[in-house]
Length: 347
Image (tube, rainbow, N blue to C red; front, side):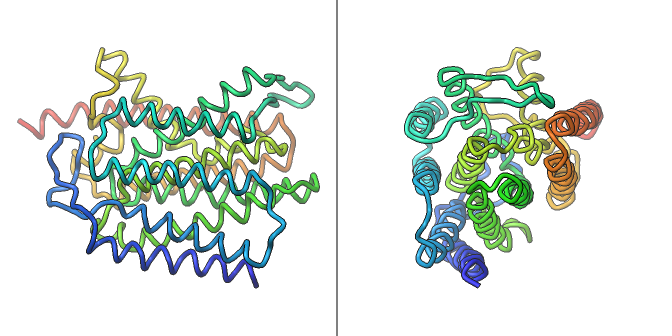
């Protein structure tokens, strides 16, 4: 009953605060090529996600006081990222300054929080990373996932909705791990589901017509929530490949786009509209249609992650590869298709 109350309060608080931000927030003006909306739209709706998560976790912790330091550290780091994003929404800090601050925030988590120091690759085959390589790998994961969620936050509901779906499946994976290993991974389950419902409260206002955007406040908060919960789960024995599989469609689009831009000799710090989802929308597909494809892909990957997580490290690695290969093929074929038709539409 406590958990249900916490989830309800997370959903309600996020819904309410997001609605208030529709009145108070500074509008996002469509003044850059990467922006796919046509009219000024309130941003910083991520404040609602932050509020919902804090309220939901607060209700849970009020009754369940036996939480660990990692629980609080995950929330602190995510809130720091969300506040940085809110600052950027208002002041446009620029990518270099924002990246330096993100490196500082995530480095603090790596130093004082959990780290992933072992990567199971197959049954009986574990890559022992150690504290140094494990710390660097953990830092890389945090920076990658927070930027991925931010990069993909250019269509109504796509990034936050996919993150919500991924958090649900990550929570299920951790629930099974907690039951099988008698570990406190159930705390990640609780945290993840509360965060997912906070995302849902925001999405009510965002998906239907894009009445408010998450902004960097939402993207950085949700990205660091995923990142820190993933590290925390990994430090408690959850296979990191299971964690990554839950968010693989977002990761695949972003990383493939970076590779494509490198091959085009493009400046990686310059804003762009080269992601596959952006090309699809520019070619005439609706925001909801494109977002729903990513939600579905994330759910399918999540099902694989959950099923494989109960069957050993070999199937986890195999499941990761079997999800990744079709995503690479589909996304690259889609990119080629949209790049071919966009010049014709422009002409």
